[in-house]
Amino acid sequence: MSETLPAAGTADVDPRTAELRERLAAVRQRISAATAAAGRSEEPQLIVVSKFHPAADVVRLAALGVTDVGENRDQEAAAKSAELIGLAMRWHFIGQLQSNKAKSVAKYAFSVQSIDRPQLAEALAKAIAREQEESGRPDLDCYIQISLEDDGGGHRGGAAPADVERLAESIAIASGLRLAGVMAVAPLGMPPGKAFEKLAVISADLRGLHPEAVGISAGMSQDLEAAVQFGATHLRIGSDILGSRPRVR
Image (cartoon, rainbow, N blue to C red; front, side, top):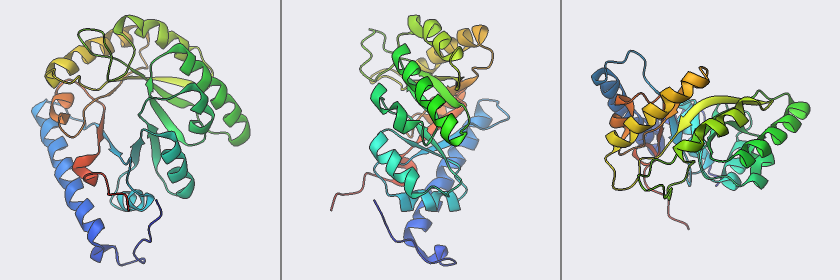
């Protein structure tokens, strides 16, 4: 995971930094165009998904103005965040999470965007309480991951829409957790616009019960325009910025 960064003042001649700058600019242009097309005045927050890429790339991203990165494996996220402890970066956990990893995630995560069951919320609440006693960390932003599968199969993860109200309540009453909103991945084979329109309706229903839960984390490299059209407040973009997964040497 470690990589030697170019010396201070030489970032302009670092080929990887130049590549990331170009890719990032292209994605930001797409976001701006999608925001304008949707008639929105405020652009969604960009979360760069840095999974499988080295900590050095996260440093480069920070130098290019990125403030938020996403990871979906605790082992990798914990190692990177510890290595970059002094970096001004918000770490978002976006992958499926086992309850026994809550203690680890509580040490670095600004948000967990994949809460899909009350047991996980309970484990995170306990872990955050301990971490707040030790470090004084802020409350954890929590997003309910929702399955948008028409057949209820949920093979891309998430709670069933019918379970959202109960799960939201378990988060809202937990000390140290802040109900921030919803997250979803467009199902395979479903037009992303249809999926994100469904998510927008679920989000509106949730806000009726919990007005503070305004976040909608939706949209990746291939479908960000549809996500912006239907109200995404956060976009999770990986390959279009960082490229394909590095080869294991």
